[in-house]
Length: 288
Image (cartoon, rainbow, N blue to C red; front, side, top):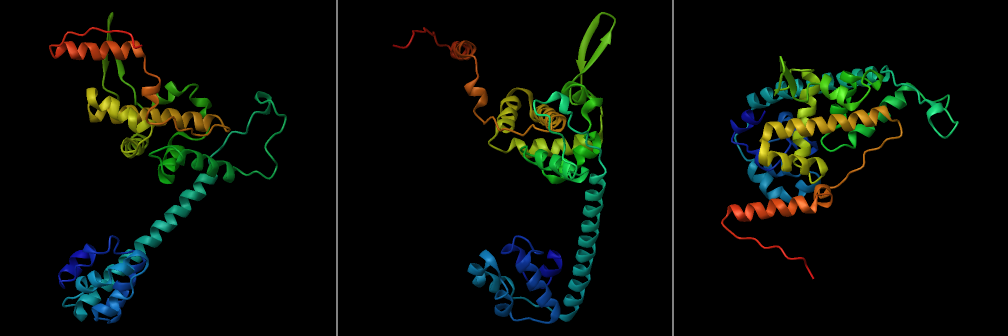
C-alpha cells in the first residue's frame, strides 16, 4: 500500500504512523472514491493528526490517477479480507479457550469452607487465567493464550516449577559420561511455547521491572542469548505459580530488588577487588 502511494508521489506514511488507522483509512477510502484535493483529504484527520493538517496537505499532494485508485481498492479489499479472517481466528481461539479444563479449587486446602459458586463457568475461569498472566511484564493476551494452549491449566502434571522448566527445555542439560558430569545447551523443547516465552522475555527486558533488571544483570557477563533464556525461565516459573494457585496474583518486586537484597560484604569484596585490579591500594574504615 505504501509503495503504491509513493508511486503517485504521496508520502502519507511520513505523517501518519498507521495507514490503516481511523484517519489513514478515511483518507485512503476518499482517494479510492475519487477525491483528489489534498486539503479536503487532510480535513479527514482525527485525533492528534488534526494539528498536522499542513503536513498532511503537503504529503497528500501528488499525481493520483484512476488506475491508482483501482489498485488501492484491490489492496484495501485484501486488507479487509485478512482482517475478517483474523477476527474469525480470534473467535475460534476464544472458543477453544473455554474448553480448557481448569481444576476446581480444593476447599479442603483452604481456611474457608466456601466452594466455587454454581454459576461459575469454565469460561470465566479460563479468561481469569489469561487476565492474571497478562499482568506479567512481557506477556500479552496472545502470549497468555499460547502458554495455556501448550501447558494447559492443570499443573498436577508438573509437580514443581522445575519440572515445567525442564519439560520446556529452558534449563541447561546434564551430560553424564561415566563419573563425569558436564552441562550442555538446552534441548529443543516445545517450539511454540519457547517462541512465545522468548518474545515475552525480549519485551520484558526493555522494561524497568524486576525481569528487566534481571536481564540487564545477566547480559553483562553471560550475553544476550543466555540472558533472554534466563528471563524466559523466570516468566515460566511465574506462570506456573499463577496457574497452580487460583488466589495467586502477580506482584512486581521492582527493578531495585537486587540492590535492596544484595549481600553488603560480598558487594564490598567485589568493589575492593575491582579497585585493586586498577592498581589501587584499598584501606577500609568503618563509617562514623
